[in-house]
Image (cartoon, rainbow, N blue to C red; front, side, top):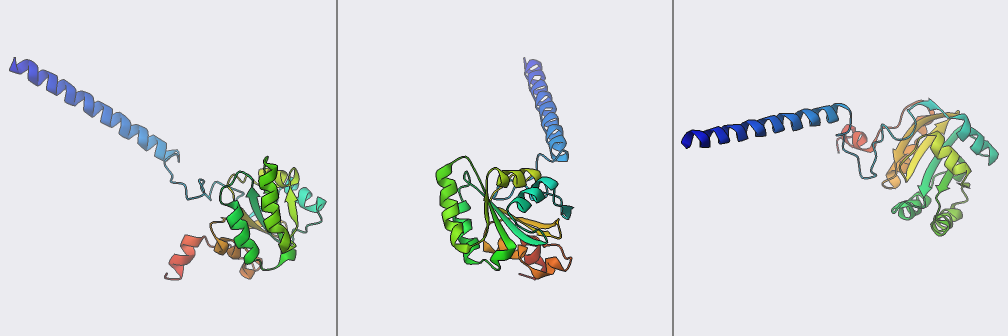
Amino acid sequence: MITLFFAIVLAWLLALTVAFVAVTRHLGVMQAAGAGLAAPQGGALLDTDGPWIPSVLPDRAAMAFRAHGIPTDDLVASFFSSSCGSCLERAEQIVASLTDPRRNVFLVTGSDPERVADITRILAPSHVPIVTDPDAQNVVKSLDIKSTPFTFRVIDGRVVAKSFVRGSGDYLRMTDPGLAAGREAVPAGVADIESGQ
């Protein structure tokens, strides 16, 4: 009887060991494939969201900007969506900290006309051009932007910086004059580490 008991316990431990090894191996494969990466608050990873930095502004986006008379020699574009819960608040923050309306454009997309109107109402007093669908959607899709609110900087037809907008500081980083001098924007966490904060 004791032998049978030890045989069952040994078989159970063997089964648990095999299951543990299988789960560990599966998690290792998932992590190697990038599935285990933790997304920031916006629900996406900055490295995989939006265009590569630096990269040429896609023709589809450039044509949409040209159709609205918006030059791409030095431009800060901020994207808002009607389905975004924090976009109204972020739009207010950006309008309050706006640096140069002539160098900005707001892209507003979405299928909810009331929410689009709410975002547009907040942005309108800034006198910054507001591009809505379908042109706003063309710009966003051509740049492979999946998260909102999102901002990016275009200099001489090249996207040189991008950021999620978690506060006005993310927007202000896109307006940095150093970007026009050829420096890339430093992400928020890295900037804090480099300054010793």
